[in-house]
Image (cartoon, rainbow, N blue to C red; front, side):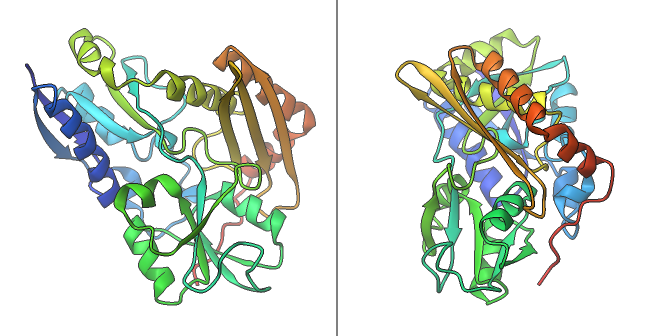
Length: 311
């Protein structure tokens, strides 16, 4: 059996994820340590993520430690992992997926339609912002940064009437007290890879690949590969208003995708099905391009995006 070192961010959720993987590896007889590594995204806490514009802002420093052999594997939220890895790395496992939907969280209100006009809704995501504003242009969409528990405290203290977070994170941390409902993907399309954990290793580490093989989930790999191919086909990172959600139905993959303007004025949708995950993602990206996704994304990349203000 091996002694394994996991590289992880230091947030409460990241450490839950790293400890979850560590527990599974220990059940196989391995000894495991967790090394906490601070990433660019952790250091920049007062600026909206969409304004940072750094690919791999939650992964680069961990990859540096992996490359330097200071750690043997890295546990990531897959939605934070760039669609194109550096050639020296690979995703050895994509684990069984948690709930991929977004969660509507509020002390007072039961759902999105029940929010009064002018209600303050917090989110850190341009993808959520775009869909929220398309659904409810009468709402105030405000910036929300911080760890899951920090965001929840801000909502409980009255800074926001509601906040939108990934269901997977609040589920994993057991912080479901104010979750009012899980927003259906057809109403709010999730981020590519949302709810899945990806385990990254050095590409030449065949021993580690074998050790981690039992954690790889075929359905999660197929659906997230499809979603990430869509994201890559549009040239998008994790902080752009693009959503992608794939499911298996009757032996086929069904992919739903959106691309929208941050102000919600234009929201493109596409649905397609197929059997080849990468091909389906690429074809759906091309279909969105033909509808005008390039024009939207060029406008976003070509100028500073209007991001939500803080309350």
